[in-house]
Image (cartoon, rainbow, N blue to C red; front, side, top):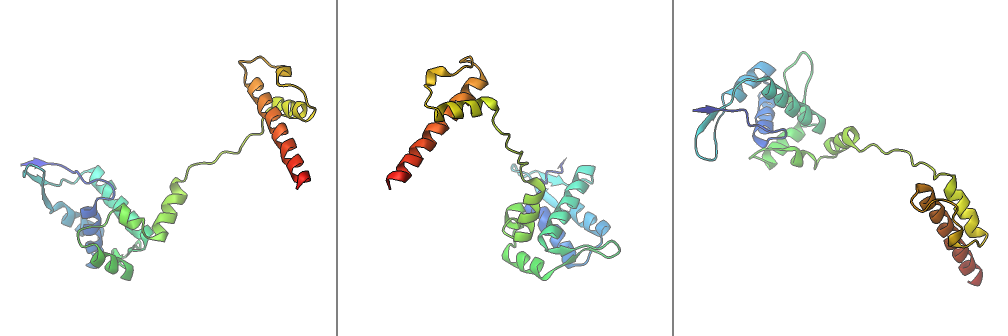
Length: 179
């Protein structure tokens, strides 16, 4: 008989077990015992026993946290985990298990996860002075070959972008006057 703790974060069976534990108002220790009493089989049919490990405890805490964020359970420091009416409804709607994909259908969970994991947007840096120089050159009808920067430099590219933008702006202004 092999042993493993192959629950993955958002595992439907683990989430459902935690939710059922909350329905029975089980405290954390009894909930852990219930999870440890689960027997599973692997793909070959070998029986797997779930062992109490720090990783399993972390995953249980993660499941409780995700269910709480989604509003399916309510947790207080001195009382056992309790299920909410939304939690009961979700258990009936998803009797085979609830994972993070299901929880993402709930705005409270989706918004909290997005706020915590949204990519950091950095400020857009203004182009270097070469851009402004190129823009002025474009407005002044200077030719493209008058770029003063070496062709393999960033300043050369910025000057070209400024020059090109000035030409585009001139064309837009001319089209506006014709209309």
